[in-house]
Image (cartoon, rainbow, N blue to C red; front, side, top):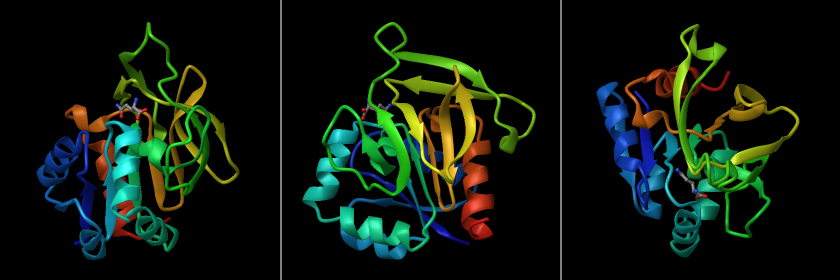
Length: 194
Ligand code: GLN
């Protein structure tokens, strides 16, 4: 059984841990560089991407994580996690891992719709729509070649995957629906990348 690390520097890591434990997954919190060597997959939670990025850089975890992801380690980033995975951040020069060829704009749904919930059609998860919670979410403004769009809201990509990298601009860990975590485990962690 793979061991999944949840980056626990800041943000909603406890919620991701709770989902993984509920699913019976072996999960550990990642707080320092040495922890990275013991994991087979990683989840980067929502939170404040500038803070998480700064801590990753300060504690020399950025390059090491990037190497592991580029070598094929499955990774899933939600919200701030998506920002940390992306190649280009339009409105900030904060550090990111740059492993997912998408362009994002932070906090881009605007003041009126700062936080909202909606039902998304997500064929990979089955017929039942997925209840998605958006909190000061990033907008994906460009999707590079080879990046698959798994869900859209208002004609914008809000869930994407390329090979071993999965990212959503919403927070599945804040609902009871475990299908996205299950998808990550079954399709990306347990059976290898397909
Ligand atoms: N607004 C945050 C950021 O830009 C992301 C919000 C979240 O993760 N819920 O980093």
